[in-house]
Length: 164
Image 1 (cartoon, helix red, strand yellow):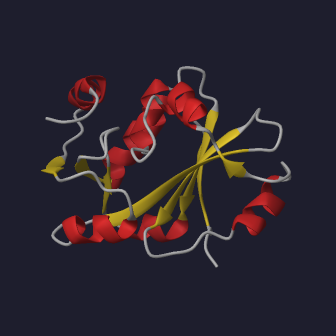
Image 2 (spheres, rainbow, N blue to C red):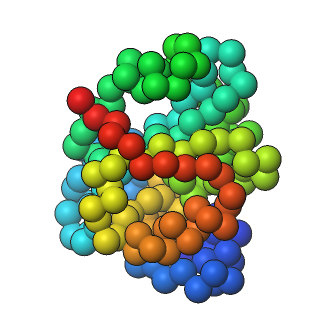
C-alpha cells in the first residue's frame, strides 16, 4: 500500500479500519473529484498555514467545495496575517511533501505544535477521506476512527465554521 508505513502500523495498533484507494497524483480538487466520485465519504481540501511570526502553524480541513474565509480566520486567531507554510515547514511539522497535506501527517508532529481547524460541515459526514501522507492514494475512515486518531496524536483541534 502506498503511504507512510508508520501510519498503517498505528492504524493497526488503534484498530482503525480504512478503505484504501490508489489513484494518480492529485494536484487540484478538480483532479480529485474525478477519482473521489465513488467514495462514500466527506471530501476535504487540506491547507497548512503559519502565522506572520512563523511560530504557530495551523492545518485547516475544509469541505472540498467551500472557499476558506482567511480574513475571518485571521481575526479569530489574532495572530496577524496567515500565509501558506513553506515546503520546509510542511516537511518539518507534518513530514509530507507539497500536494500531500493530510491530517494523518500529525503523526510526525512529535512536539504537538500544529493546531487543527476542521470545517464544521465535515462533522456531518460519517466517513472522511484523506491521503496517507502521499497524494497517490486515499484512505476513507469513519469519523469516530478519525477522532480516535486525533486523540492519539495529542494535537489540539476544533470544529469551526470556516467558509464564506
